[in-house]
Amino acid sequence: MNHVFGPVRSRRLGMSLGVDLVPWKTCSLDCAYCECGITTEKTSELKQWVDIQEVLSELDEFLKENKNINFVTLSGSGEPLLHSDAGKVIDFVRNNYPEIKTAILTNSTTLHIPGVIDSIMNAHLIMPSLDAVSEDVFIKLNRPADGITADMVIEGISLLVKQFRGEIRLEIFLADGINNTEAELSKLAETVKKLGIRNVQLNSLDRPGALPWVKPLSGKQLLEAAAYFENPEIITRNWNKSDTSTRQDNPLPIIISGLKRRPQTLQDIMAVTGFDEYDAEKIMELALRSGSVKTKLIDGTVFYTVE
Image (cartoon, rainbow, N blue to C red; front, side):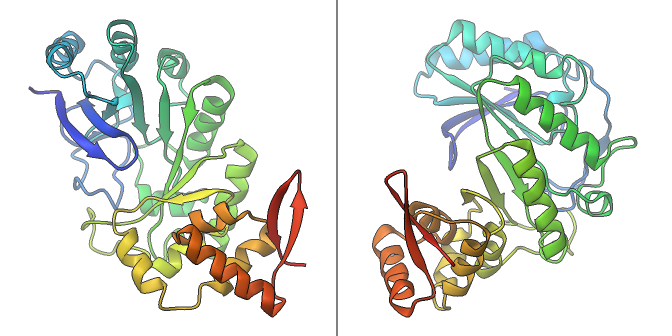
């Protein structure tokens, strides 16, 4: 098959069947961290990059014989929403295989274009990306096609939040020394809050990126970055390894840093630190005994806070 790949066991989607709607490395960005390598066709043009009927035929052939799929996911080596008929794939699955959900991984560069969001309203889940708010950081890390700006990406995500009725999970890719500075993380967190997005996923490098200067965040750095956001989830594949080394350090200063920004439940702290319930309870018990942290009851739920 030329356009359908997998299925693969996805951390986020279960058994996911991928659909690639553009030729290899056709994208509106040339992200320095991309694990697929350098973008060879950098463009912002929306068109029928591949024959959509061929895509639908391949998809139908596979799904007729394979029913244990959780998601059909528009993804691949480039930006799927550069295809002008991407929405037809979503509608095809919805109409012919209603038991299977659909997801879209997008770099958010086309969402501001009239008609794009309307065409994908039948998707169950959309995962847009926002790696930078400052234009200089956006250019350095995402290396966009001509005419694409950070503000344009933010505008597109804002429109998606207002119009889309399915689930949205915002992904932020963090590169050491580039967009994990206090200034950029503060801007990202403020923007996410204004957008009204509640599900934020933080990612970092798992394998070599397109350019050698891109470095992954350590476990400690990921925890520090997570403290800027409400209910963040760390999704990098190497998180467990990073988490193991991080637990050798004292996580309490990082937790307190997050509590200074907002009260958090035990579940919030578990999500940020990666600890299970038992370890998280022990850490917070010590914090309460030391007097560095207090609790308050809000609508029947216990929140930890720093006075």
